[in-house]
Image (tube, rainbow, N blue to C red; front, top):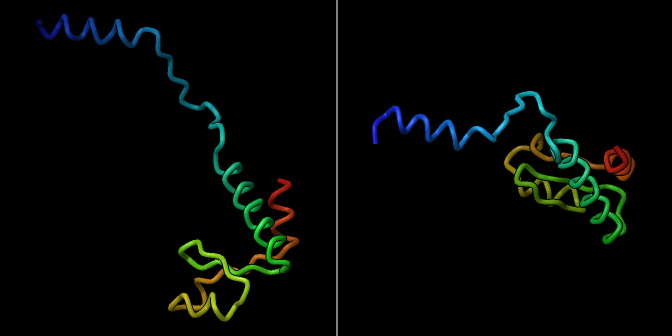
Length: 91
């Protein structure tokens, strides 16, 4: 098969495809953030706490001390409150 024939075959196969460069992504960052907030709310409800601590590995703790011990730096521990998780889940 010649290169001209190959390019015609490639064009014929891709003829039905359309690409929209600025199309909105379904299930993007907002959906991930909402799912994450819902998971955090579920953990808070299950353990009956109002504050969670998450380390840089994505692990959740109900005790700040345990979260800090799981990290080499305290700056890597994020505090999540019930009010913040509720706002994020509704957004």
